[in-house]
Length: 353
Image (cartoon, rainbow, N blue to C red):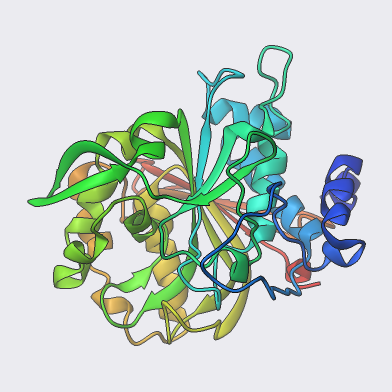
């Protein structure tokens, strides 16, 4: 296969943005630069990482292009948000509930760089129209993010405002944050690959939305089954969510959700099917011998809400290997003849620089 040399180089805008965080050291341990520093309830960041932002950018770019069938990064992102205007708002749900294994800022930054390449009628999406969020228990600074609620730069904050609209999640009353309920036009969900030792078996993309509602603890009954699927089926989440990303560079087969990584996967998964991506994430944890993933039955009941498939015979899997060098592509078609879920799995052993 022809070598795609363009993925070996980071564009100048990305280089400047990363380097401005903290000199060239930012290229190996970047923070999401969200503008104004605000007082946080937690201690200042001591985040450091051996993740390569150059490799992660290539992984996300190749993943989104192959998932959408577009050859241009900006066009690929725009295809997922066909009605987005230059005045629109894109929300990015991250998982910073534990700084030991959060949604890595390198992955979030790669998504942002892609969003900024969209052509919105001859203009780019303003950075201030991108909102990174998690709930009030998020450890943002410890996870490498900088809070920002100002009128410049990418916004980054813990949600403190919830809509008055009440939703029934399998009989449990929930309010969604106003960002998702009322403000955002599109939603990107970036989960983390880890088990959940006490309450859900695994916490991947679907469960990440426990940080979108006001009373998540009320839905941990029966290991979150069927509440997690029902939550993701709520109209504001279901209609606005255009992509799920599973940050699987590191993974935790045991000790999650608060413990650190127990293995290296060097993968990033992308899909519009929120059930299929969680199914495959659970399979990775299962391969690592996780003792809790059998509890994650919410992945098996979620298809009942019409939000995706947990049937591997109905999935089209696009495997992308080594996007920073000689890219290898291999697609596994749905063996049942019916494709319901499409997932891109990108792997690069240089993700850890």
